[in-house]
Image (spheres, rainbow, N blue to C red):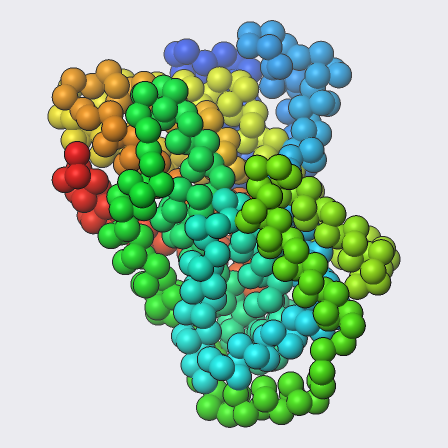
Amino acid sequence: MQRAIKALAPILLGVLIWVLPAPEGLSAATWTYFALFAAVVLALVLEPVPPALAGLIGVTAATVLRLVPMTPGKAPSPGEAIKWCLSGFSNGTVWLIFAAFMFALGYEKTGLGKRLGLTLIRRMGKKTLGLGYAVALADLILAPFMPSNTARSGGTIFPIIKNIPPLYGSTPDNNPRGLGAYLMWTALATTCVTSSMFLTGLAPNVLAQSLVEKTAHVNLAWGQWFMAVLPAGAILFLATPLLTYILYPPTQKTSENAPIWAAEELRKLGPLTGREVTMAALAVCALLGWIFLKDFVDPTTVALAAICVMCLAGVVTWEDVIGYKQAWNVLAWFATLVTLADGLGKTGFLKWFAEAASTHMQGLSPTATLLGLTILFFVSHYMFASITAHVAALLPVMLATAMAVPGLNIATASMVLCATLGIMGIISPYGTGPSPIYFGSGYVKSKEFWILGAIFGVIYLGVFLLVGFPWILSRA
């Protein structure tokens, strides 16, 4: 009975929205697409079918009905419709997420991940909270130099920490709340914070900087960005591992003998093997490529090259790659979500939504208007599977709205809106690049992921509005 309800709920929601009259300014096809999108999102929450299948059903239905135009106002041809349907599979971030799972596979197959996990436990393993702060600190150190948080957290940190929970008897299927769920959520939540703190901590930050300069003729410098976000960012960074520990507590809180045990296990492992050295060298090379070659080689290209070398060097086999069902499942899931979110922009729904919302703010004071725009900009991220897409679709509309408000400092408004880009990624399992990786690990179950996303989203936005918002206004 419960499964039947879960299966019917998305269908009923989609039908209910569809039968309602389309709002003024939206075509029937656009309103139909939004109904379909809402149904898919509810299916992702309830999981009557696997998430990847829900996404595939959504893009297939939109393709069959030809709801997403390639040219505004013109129905797509069958060829254009299928091209849109498959577009997510050519997205670089999607393949970078896939590569992160392959890196994790390399760490696992060579034993390097176990060695690194044991080393962390030996040094900081007496307290689970200490491990949480170790993970957070690792992300903070890398964040200023790695604009891709998918590469930073998903490709560098996740493959290492994935090996720690099993050492404590915590796996996705057995005792996930023991340690694994806590570490995975801490890693994701932390990278969302560090992505906001630095202009170079998130690729869409740089895109936002460019759009602000073109639209509002305001230049947001690296130092200016850092100082603007620092008060709220520092609070959230220091609080996140502890907040997770309180709100989503691990059952494995202490283990006084863990460092002794880890040291003994490391002794049993013996010296580094050749495969471990090769895997470590590839990881370092990929990290250096992500940091120093970002202007010459795309991060996804670096990751794919590393996978090829992993196979050729015998770190993993091709059979290992094609047999890693978890990675292929996440690839299909996120590719369809990226496509579905792109459809909201192509159908014109997002532009209509932003303009309609901003119209209701007319007549408010400049500060109240900016506050409303900030909340709207943050919450609307539920409709995006990419912060880059969010920036490209909504930031110019928000900036144009802000520029039309008498007395509102556009430089201040630009900084306030851009400062939320990293932290908004926490709200959903598809909100930012690393999200599908940590969700796909299986430790944090679907319902828990959505609830935690909402709770941390409220906390992150609340701290920003109470601390960051007035701080940025005071610097105007």
